Figure 1 (spheres, rainbow, N blue to C red):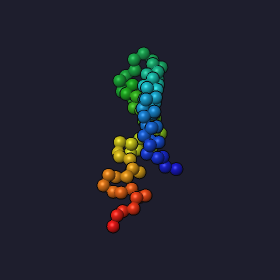
Figure 2: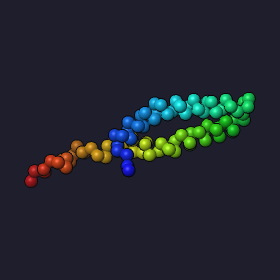
Figure 3: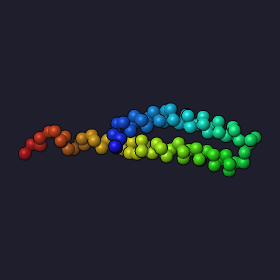
Figure 4: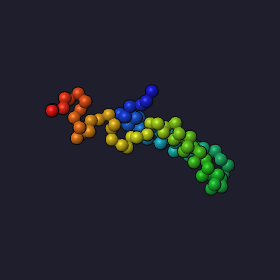
Length: 86
């Protein structure tokens, strides 16, 4: 089942307002579990890994959200319910 444009748009806002701070807290917590100060490359790998794990399930929510609503009637065309005048 495909997600509707308005549904995806609302969920993308919720994901960004709730999910992104949760990701930041999780990444911060995960790096605090590492002993002392880890090497920069290891720390970078943890951040990238957590970022990919967070973004992959959400890619369908964000797909096409920045574009115009494909279901909305365009300003130049009459809506499907309107009868075009001959």
